[in-house]
Image 1 (cartoon, rainbow, N blue to C red):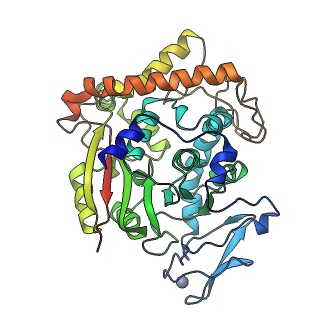
Image 2 (image 1 turned 120 degrees about the vertical axis):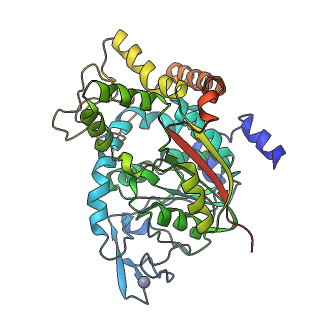
Image 3 (image 1 turned 30 degrees about the vertical axis):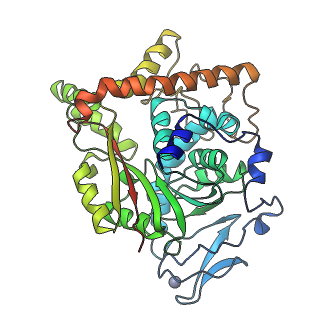
Length: 409
Ligand SMILES: [Zn+2]
């Protein structure tokens, strides 16, 4: 295990030529009519009763519940009965974020893979994902895959067979638009995953647990779909965050009587502080779900958070640009009522253009500059974490990663 990890951590990556990566995948993509695009999938099970689904045909169907799950113009919708509201409830936040994200980065990450690390959080994600030790040909599931950004990079780098689920239809459509790697995408609920038990060698879910109403069920579902001996990685927002940049900002806002406004910003992206957990609680959930916790890593006390959110804002202000609350340049999304604040936006994201529809990406120089930037961020990460150590060692951090394994029987 150690040898393998060293290899991965030295950053040796699979070739980034999409043709090469595609060749390594057992299943070729098909770009024929949308109805023919759905490949047979032996991992699928009814989200209600977990009976293996038969299909694809015109719809996936469950012989036990006599339910049919429609293929919505190339996107199978695998929600259990009564869960359709989830699609509306959760999705709008992610749809909006996805538009914002994509206008800026979609043309880039398909070309650069993990070398396009645009902040320390992504650098940390990449490092944690390497600890899953994905191997070529293994099945990998991304729960809350959004537009497939991370999943496509995992497939690109390690040659796994990727499946992604999300509740955001907009995000999944974007993922399908750029699906040169032949990944499988389904609209599904993290709390009722439409897969048979033990279907995946590795499972990850980042930025998702804080958005689900039943975290213990979320952990149980990740555990269920992992095979015995399979590995699971997820992250969660840490309740124990008093001594972090966010904690201090919150304290300062309360002091100035702006606590309500600060909470509203958090709620606007679906982050309800009442739902945040601490690592001990999540460890117990893992145990209850039959997972063996390998590592819990508290992250983001001050320095990485400052680099990711404050530094871009400072730099943007110096350049007369506007950025959002996490420091990303604001780009007007399509169909937004002018509230996205497109002033001084990235010129690639021209107003009204469908993001991802025709992004040409940067030239060779721009790509090289971004790769250099990503390399620098990878280098900064250990330094930033070292500076954070006095706090993270005490358990203070904005978030934490959980790496666990489903024991062999
Ligand atoms: Zn069923």
